[in-house]
Image 1 (spheres, rainbow, N blue to C red):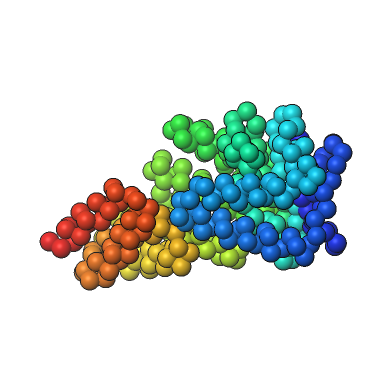
Image 2: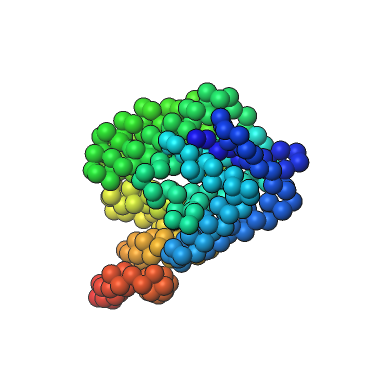
Length: 317
């Protein structure tokens, strides 16, 4: 069953495809709610607070369940799909609707997405789109999820074929820059795992302007970190490009610190400290490691803290 949520001139219209029942929510009330849930999701993710994420998901569900609208969808037969539609994605309510963490939707039994008996997918539709285009985008999102399952199983070539020939092709045809950039990032990760570093770098370079234009700071940090990793793997630090690698890592590290993401701070910071040490900047490397240690401590990551200690000793020699 498909549940559809879309802003109109007067309200937030929630309706089901092929089933009776609808819900109309006040626009003025909806905007701050959606924005607050997005902020709380980010904070909970930064702190690895699963209880807080579950609370957000249940609040979202309860908000949409008056009277029993979302429950009707959740109890429906077959795969459940939630379509978030925004004809004008730059409008404030539409932007908040698109950014809201619908993936966290949860009922009394827990996260809907965590129930293997209830296949759950979310499609965000930006701009005007035909029914055929919406269906194609939904199928592409589903296939991307399947490709990620293949990746987890180590079936890299199969995943690469799906991501390239099926998923990316759809989002290129639909001119969906956000989903295209996300898919290119997944493809680049597979290419790196396959040792095809030059192709992976080309994809990151291609997706960089789109991610920058979208204002996706987390995505930008990931691209810069990935590019620096590829340069190191290609040995560019030994061919006069250590400064470029440092700049990419420093940008990624700064963004992650601004966003308050301890996991990213830890991973990026460890590599940044090593690059600083390569350039003879030991004091700066130790300062970076202090920040990294605080991040791993917040995450209660004992292995990460031990890695910091070992790196301090190595740099100090």
